[in-house]
Length: 92
Image 1: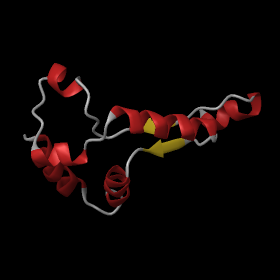
Image 2 (image 1 turned 180 degrees about the horizontal axis):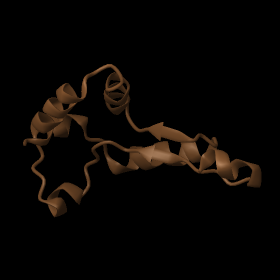
Image 3 (image 1 turned 180 degrees about the vertical axis):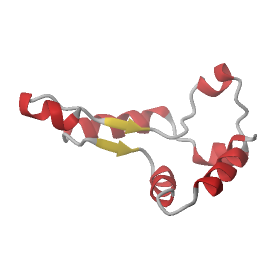
Image 4 (image 1 turned 90 degrees about the vertical axis):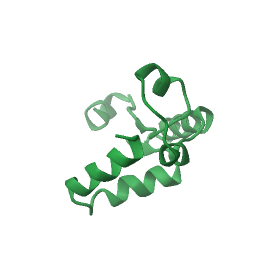
């Protein structure tokens, strides 16, 4: 969408927030493990990251250094390993 709408002066930015300390987990019935809490960011910095990326006309942004490391490392990690790690992080 970013590329398609750019000629019309419309910017589209995708924000990948990772885990954020909101009420989502409680509402979803999710258990916050210590590993998940270590990855969590406060909502304010996540929102600021997204807004700044939008104002700079970036097509996408990942909030937080730990989330960036996780997103980058997933390119080199087999899916089965990713699944196992996320199951442990999510407490499953």
